[in-house]
Image 1: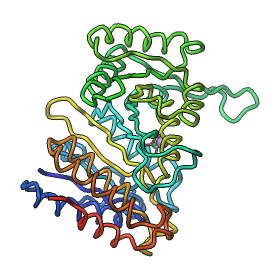
Image 2 (image 1 turned 30 degrees about the vertical axis):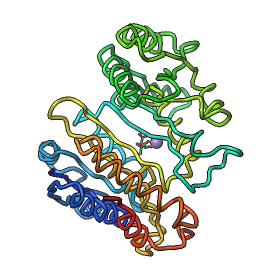
Image 3 (image 1 turned 30 degrees about the horizontal axis):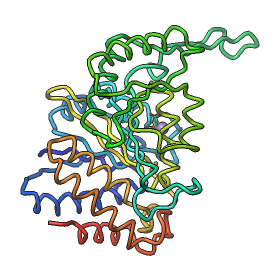
Image 4 (image 1 turned 45 degrees about the vertical axis):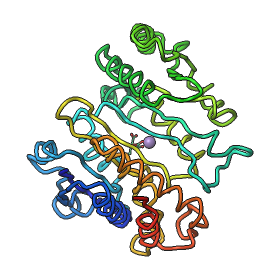
Length: 354
Ligand code: IPM
Ligand code: MN
């Protein structure tokens, strides 16, 4: 397995190191080889060279089986530059049209939801990752004047929503929830009567091909309510890019915070290159202190394994993570874990069952 590694900014490289430590251990137990290639993309390189992704970089990254990304975001770089120039650029150029976000409360992890436990908080959000308000379609008129006009258009295509919805149905079928396979479309059909009407009609059409999956619908505002009140209701959610961005931060909080939440930017097509990352940012104030939580980063590595044909290895890592969160860590907050960043990585390695 050939993996491109972008450690990135701030604490990104520290948590990436722990994920790689776990990868090396599980490669032994599961008997596969891997090869890592480091890329120094991120804020420091940008400040030195003015370049975010050099010419040819995307085509080079395309050659890998997967990309592992630590974090981007640098205190001396204006917000938006690295996010757009690196993260969104790779999502678009590599056509990673699925953003996969498991919302799972691991054993021993505290949730702000009263009376909810790991059996209640265990669902997956499938977010469309290439369209919607993220396309950058829009502009200004009379900028800087009292008559200024700004537009920002949401772009939805039949192809774009259909491939995402179909993948979500397949995923729900495979996930095989013992309580019944339920796929909830989250949108806002009562107001976005063009774009989300296209999503709604496409969802109804594709649902006919999956009679074993129950199709379901929530408006996005109601979904936020249910995620807090009855998270156990959900199995898989499929949603648009912008709403997916928002509800997955809510999801990250109910699963115990940015220290544990992981995600994948997936191009599921043959030969497609996917990218996996912890959800938390670069947390620059914690850089170099060994206090940042690497659980999300290790979870992102588990997802990478699952999506690149090493399902058993991915599951083994997830099980080990839960041993560590359930019995070894005091908290998931940076600096309060009861152990250092690298000790958490060691504990996960020790907890891998053979
Ligand atoms: C995410 C992030 C990105 C997004 C930002 C950094 C552009 O919030 O992965 O959810 O909005 O998609
Ligand atoms: Mn986000």
